[in-house]
Amino acid sequence: MAASVVCGFSALRPERLAALRLAVEPLTREAFAPFGSVMDIDGAELRMINGGTTERYHRLAVSDTDSEGRTIVSLFRGQPRAFPFSIAMMERHPEGSQAFYPLDKQDWLLAVAEDDSGRPARPRVFRASGVQGVSYGRNVWHHPLLALDDVSDFLVVDREGPGLNLEEYFYSEPFVIEAADLKKRDKP
Ligand SMILES: NC(=O)N[C@@H](O)C(=O)O
Ligand code: NI
Image 1 (tube, rainbow, N blue to C red):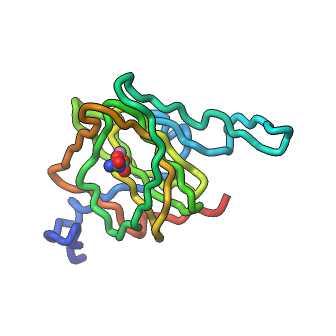
Image 2: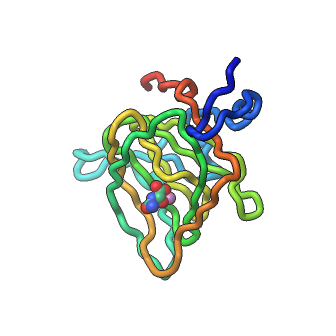
C-alpha cells in the first residue's frame, strides 16, 4: 500500500502514519471529566423560572478566572477545517478557563491532552454534537477551535486581563485526524 502523504509535507511510512492517527471519540461527561465540563442540557439541573415560562439549565459550567482578570463573553465564527487535519500544536490558558457553546446546532470537534511534565501528552479528539459545549479547565491543554462542515458560531466565555494567558506547544511530529474517522453522530 502506498504511503499516504500527511500534512502536505512528506510521505510517512504507513506504520508511522497509523501511530499518529488520532481516534475520534463521542463527547461524554465521563470521558471529558479530566479536562473540564461538558455543557449539555441533558443531565443538567433544570429550574422552571419566570412563572414557568422559562427553563433554566443551571450552572452548565463554572468559569475560573484569576483575581487580576475578568470573565468576558465573545462570539467566535469558526471556518470549517479541512481533512486530513494535522494537530501540530496545543495551547493552554494558565489564568482562566475557556468555554465554547455552539450556536448553529452544528457538530464540531475538540482536542485536549493531559499535561506531561509541562508538555501536552498525546491528544484526545472528541466529536461534539451541535447542542454540546465544553468548558476547558484552567491550564488544560487544548487545540484552538475546530469547526466542522460549515462556518460555525460559538459563544465563548474566557478571561481577559493583564499578563500572558496563552502557552503554546508544537509537537515534533503532528498527529492527524482523518476524514474517515469523523463518524457523524447519529441524531440523539
Ligand atoms: N485565541 C483564542 O482566543 N482562542 C483560542 O484560545 C481557542 O481555544 O480557540
Ligand atoms: Ni484556547
